Image 1 (cartoon, rainbow, N blue to C red):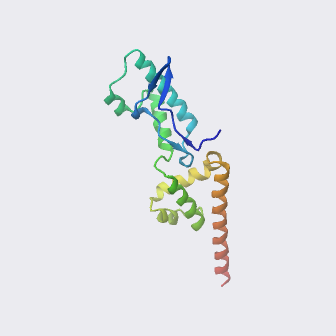
Image 2 (cartoon, one colour):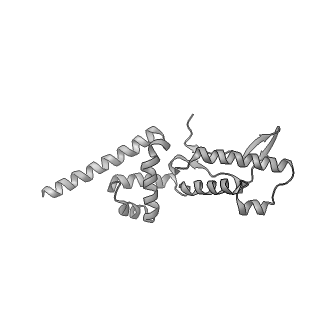
Image 3 (cartoon, rainbow, N blue to C red):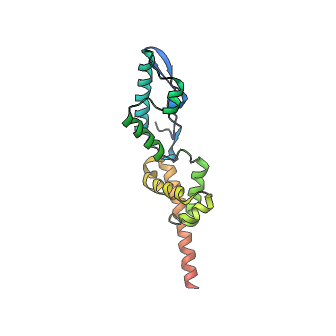
Length: 171
């Protein structure tokens, strides 16, 4: 069962008691167009949940302020991995920005990142990074029909551009 939006669990049953994870330790919503490494992040999230439950059970939870500033209960290496994985994803990209990206790619071609970024009113660095992720991970991360639709729209737009260019060369 595929769910394009991964909503990490907020609570879990531990020893027949419901344990709720503090907001600062929870993973963000992970939508398919944001290209997070969901599997690994969910593994780390589960591990963090288990750490939280174990610390809570023995009464050794750090203060709320400490958890809010650290934003994790994982060891140093795992905490760093979690931070890197969250930074690799595009959590700040909305669904409408994704659709605008696809539309701009169709309008200007996938390689004209300067015009695409101008159309979207975003820095070229952001659009360039997203474009790289889109073409690398799109086939595996997006639902098949969503990927096919986006790719087809972009390819049709690129064919129109090529046709206009060819007509311009003939004149």
